[in-house]
Length: 420
Ligand SMILES: Cc1cc2nc3c(=O)[nH]c(=O)nc-3n(C[C@H](O)[C@H](O)[C@H](O)COP(=O)(O)OP(=O)(O)OC[C@H]3O[C@@H](n4cnc5c(N)ncnc54)[C@H](O)[C@@H]3O)c2cc1C
Image (cartoon, rainbow, N blue to C red):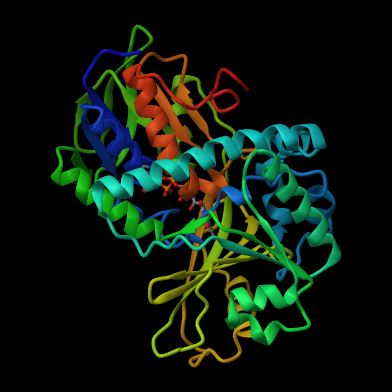
């Protein structure tokens, strides 16, 4: 526990902004630094928008290695490993493969679920306390199966999470279409589904920007357009955060820089296994379309989510191991558009929609790094992978508890540097 009442939060994605909010609520004098001109402009910008404890299973599962090999180089596959990315992936890939067994899968699922379900409670509390609006909905999610394998894999996840307390309802095709009538074009193609009534959704960018705005008017110093260069230490403790504008004296800081966290950690001898796993989304305006879906959905076989965010539909997913290539691959975007138009052939403007790509800050076990480091006053809140929006509020609250020494209500075993 550090006694100072000043904390610098590094990075203004959804994870950094929620950290700043919860620290400020505990009475800290918080400075939030973000290199862009607003919050939530990197991975938190146009993600799937689902707040989903129901997807607490990590990607590292017993089945995945065989699928990755099968899909290697295929542009229309949900997981795409580009051979050119292999050299930079070796160390992370070995760690990932070590997690692809039943024991690790069950252990990691339990840790992720603990954080996700706690996080959803913290989100609801935050929204009640601040009143911020972010095109949110509380309608649950509908997971659709197209084949026997998806049924088996997804049922195993549901049963595992069900044993931990998550409610789910198994549905046949007719019940799926009754729940979400916009699926009627899929009659005869759906093998079944699961409704998770307690999942939620919302726009992570809107949330980040409005929460940052709220923080700024409630005492947090928000510094946009400033690039963090390094963290300075003295006698094994944080002494300053150096940006391209200034050295800010600080004895406590939280690293929430997503994929770029290692740039400030590595010089301090900390190297986290975070790989930037590329994903894509398309956002379609609802406009005059009367048949638009309302319930957020996940097509489990294709690994694509469809989420209603106010007057827009977000279609997001797919994973590409392609290093730091930020280009918007037209084939991957085309796949999302095709998928959307297949499911909703009555969408009135087939050429509409805006594409986006972002990098999930992915750890091999799917669990973020939270909490203390060997450097006194240096805290981690990073590596939230495919679930950073879902986990953000819980992670922010936990960090604030840890820094203030408040009694935490979440067991951090499996999430800290020291416990893995
Ligand atoms: C296609 C896709 C779909 C997804 N769908 C979902 C979903 O449905 N539900 C869900 O829960 N999660 C989803 N995710 C995951 C989620 O978006 C991420 O886990 C989350 O956005 C990570 O937030 P973050 O704050 O850690 O990272 P970021 O949002 O990337 O924030 C890090 C911030 O640090 C700043 N920064 C970095 N370096 C510096 C520097 N040197 N100086 C100053 N600032 C710096 C960056 O500019 C950035 O703003 C999805 C991700 C993708 C790609």
